Image (cartoon, rainbow, N blue to C red; front, side, top):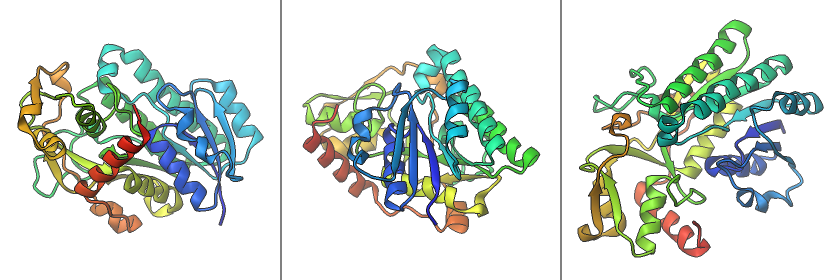
Length: 317
């Protein structure tokens, strides 16, 4: 059944892949993005798609705009990906992150409550405390708001779940682990994979914070988008928190070596905000498989090859 879908943050890195998947599945999609993180060029290839109903350049902080969008259109699902996503920025300027990630989410929730629209809320693995179990981090793992970004996301998560409990609104909190792939920014705001590959292609050194032994569970973006979309389709995850990751972690030092293949091109630098560092992140996605039948399909090695080829071919920065 074709659905009407509002996608906030749809011009962002993960958002554009979610948009692509939704359009491929035959749904009508409205994208709302203020382009503070996203780029309109990310979604230009969809402009000739008849099911892309509108690109609305605007902010989730604009309540009158949201009111107009929700009253003018009838949505079945709101995939809420719009957010401030940079950990370091959140430490330097917590107000902006809190407003966008917590207050903005509240504004979305209020519209979805009034119009009975399911909410899929994009959270983050950065809400978790470090991994201490060999089986990886499950949804019951302790949280630790080590940055205002994580704190704002946990606050928003609780509001999202409260709307399920208090109003019976279908809502789900999803926590993808560190996502990478084509269309991720390669500059300071980008992810570690994109930055490392871009530096390699530019003949620059790869800088690692601290000793580089901190680990990340790296999820290829198309696997992530498939997870995001499936969480909207299924009522089995309503009222739930669900993780998604590769189920394999790698030390940042090892990742750099895997990408550049030369230890001499790797240098260690002092961490800007060491207090926000999570030493070990390893995802347990059993719940996603149990409830959604989702599991990752792209290995880290394959994902790195695809990402490098894309950055090289596109001249992306």
